[in-house]
Image 1: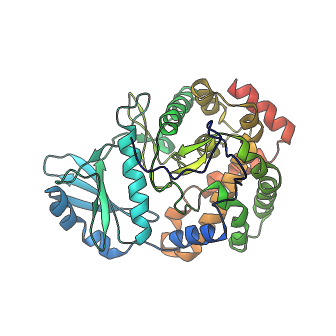
Image 2 (image 1 turned 90 degrees about the vertical axis):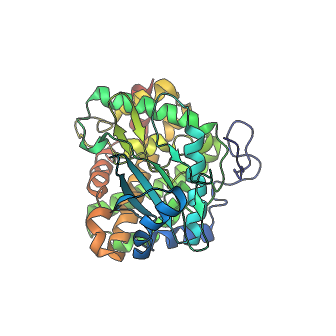
Length: 365
C-alpha cells in the first residue's frame, strides 16, 4: 500500500531519531484534541442516513442495524442475499482522517497471511471511501466468528492469537499510511496527561494502583520508549476486536490505529488477558509466547512490557470512568472492559520490576 507517510522521523530501524521526543507530536494540544473526540457521541442523524448513503454510493439496499460505537457511527447491513456488511460513517471533521487511515490500513493488509481482517467494498466509482460535504464513510465485509471474550480461551487458543497478532504487527510495519498522527486518546503519548481524569475514579484502593502505574510509566518507561521500534499499530486488539473464525484469527476495528511503539499491540492484547491470580502474568503468558515466536521481543521490550501493560490498564480505567460519567446512558457499554482491567492491574501490581522482567523473559523466549 502506497500512501502519504507522515511518520515521526526515525533512524531507519523504526526508532525515534535525532532530537525527537516521545512527547512530540503528543503535545498538550494533541491531548486536548484527542479528548474532545472521545467526549462527543455520533449524531443520530448519521444512523438515519445510512440506508440512503448505502444506495447512493454502492447501489445496495438492505436492512440496517446500528451497532454500539464510541466515536463513529457503525451499522450492520444485511443484504437481501443474506450477506452482511459493515457501514461506517462520520459527520465530524476528524472522521475523515480516521477513515482515510482505516481504509488505507485495510487495503494494505489485503493479501497478508497468518490472520484475517475485513475487506473493503469499493464505491460505485471505485474509491475506497465516499466523502460528501457533510458526511463520509466506507463499507467493509462483516467477518463471522466468535469474539475472544466469548471463546474458550485455552492456552493453545491464546498462543494462536499471539502468533496472529505477531503476523499482524509484521504486516502493519510494512505499511506507510495517511493520518497516523491524528489525535487518538488511547495513544501512549497521551498517557502522562490522563491523570487529569483521576477525579472520576471510585474512591478505593484501585485509584492508588492506577496512580502508581501511571507514575511508573511517566518516570521510568516513557523516557525509554524512543529506543524501541515504532511503526503503524492496530492499537486496540482487545477480546472484542479479536475473532476466532475457525481457521483464522481475525482482527477488526482499526479506528484507534496510529504510529506507536511496535510492542503496543502486544501490550493492549495482553492487558485484557491478565485474569488468573495464580499465574505470574495472570494467564497472558501464552499470548506473549505466541507473539514472540513470530515477532521476537528485544531486551528493552521485555524490560518495559509489564509496566506498559499496567499503564494501558490504568488508561482504560481512567478514560472509561470519565466517559461513563459523560454518557451515563451508555455506561454499561463504555465500561465493558473496566472490571477486567482493574482485576489485571491488581494482579500485576504484586510483581516487582525485577520479577516482571524475569517472568516476561520466561514466557517470551
